[in-house]
Amino acid sequence: MAIELNDIYAARERIRGGAEESPLRASPWLESKSGVVLLKLEVVQQTGSFKIRGAWNACARMNEQGAGRDLRLITASAGNHGQGLACAALNFGYPVTVFASSQAPRTKLDAMRFWKAEVRLCRDYDEAERQAKTYAAEGHGIYISPYSHPDVIAGAGTIGLELLDQHPHLDAVVVPIGGGGLISGIGIAIKALSPSTRVIGVEVAASCPFTTSLAAGRLVEIDVKPSLADGLTGNLDPDTITLDIVRRVVDDIVVVDEPDLRGALAGVIAHEHVLIEPAAAAGPAAFVSGKYKASGNVAVVLTGANIDSSVLADVLRSPLA
Image (cartoon, rainbow, N blue to C red; front, side):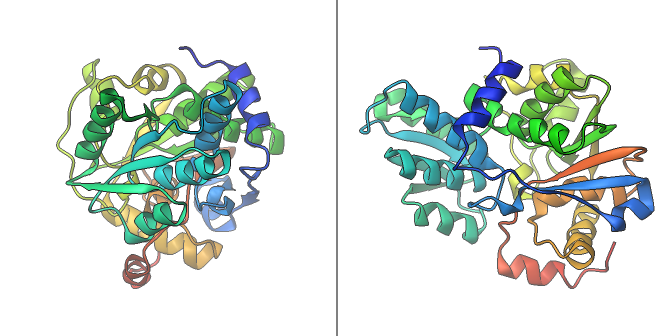
């Protein structure tokens, strides 16, 4: 199913009351290094990340279509999508099972359970995704991918609409890339409404399936390494729809290293006084590391704030970027 601009506009109406229109705020700290930079603060969402947008849209669509309340929703998650889907499903009355990595931050696992999800722990994210798809295929419910699902992508794309409403003259938007659902949705919206605005993705060196696959001209399985940004790691679903979308709507992808992430995370918290999780530091890391040199008006999506206290304490001991 192709995702069009009208799907994103429809998603914006569906998610009212479930997701906030997040603020867009100037960053004097990043501006001093690379021009005019604006931070899109998805940290304000009720589940602490942008994932509530796609999850709420998916649940609302099923509700519109008359799906029975005995329909179980099944997903795989590094943490934030599972939490977002559990929150949205609880509102609409659907039961949820989340397959998650046993290495996921405890704060994210606890949050999924807080929103009444059944959580099944797996070896890693790739295994969680395989088990979730198998469980759904066996007839236990419907699988809602955290990134490769039209309603999830359309919901994420509402950020693109808000960005252009808040600042119509953006030269670029910088977006972290995990499974590609967020940048796919934002890219579809931005390129439809402001084709000259560049869409820039940021992957982590420990897990860069898009950089690798786009260079190869096909989906490539990578050797995933550990990363501070757990929400951005893992291989792509072999059936993903995001690779083709990213190929079409993303202008460039940069790759940041672990020291870049650590320094940017500490820097955002210290200089911007905004609590973010490591995956959300990918965009700022592209700036402070010099991997991305911006000019003009650039928006950076700070995707979430769900960080374990032990990780936070450790990172705050890092030298500031």
